[in-house]
Each structure stands twice: as C-alpha cells, then as structure tokens.
Image (cartoon, rainbow, N blue to C red; front, top):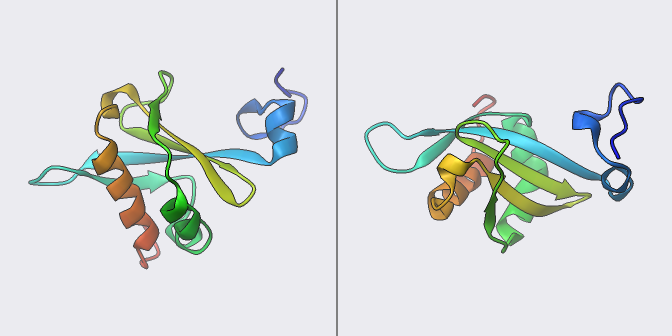
Length: 116
C-alpha cells in the first residue's frame, strides 16, 4: 500500500520500505563520446554525497543488475537500505550492458569534482 497522505514521501514508498529505511536514487547515463561505455550525467545524489557515503557500499555490492520496465531511457536506479546497496535496476535499453553500467557508476563514485 502506498502512503499518499505524507506529501514529502519519495515516490509514495510502501510501509515496509519506509520502515526498513529503503530509498531509491536514480541516475541518468549517457553513452561516452567516441567509444563504448556509459557515463553518469545526472543523478538525485550530488557527486560529493555519492563519493562520501556510497563509494564503499558500491564497491562491496556483488549482486546483478535487474531490468525495470518503468525506468526511462538510460536510467539506473540504486536501491539502498540504511547503509548498504540493496539492488541496482536499469532501464530495458541498458539490460545486457552490466559491465559498462557498473563501471560508469563506480567511476561516478570516484569523481571529486562538484558537478556531473
């Protein structure tokens, strides 16, 4: 069940997700110019927050990417629970490009600049 009565609730999280501290952060990937692979161009987290808080949990993540039909073109969704990465979901157009998508996310977590 959704919680629409709480206006600041992100994406209308369900009760179980809210109690577990589960959040979903979305990133927009774009193909790298003149080569193969992807790069993170936009996201709901700042590069500083991604580097400081999620770099180590991303490095420890050993799961597989799953496809999620309602994500937009070149979108990646990182589902976190408290201090760990629970799952990574990609748009159907990125399915099958697991290595390139994970490399782009790890590269973004290593950035030190202040903007995407």
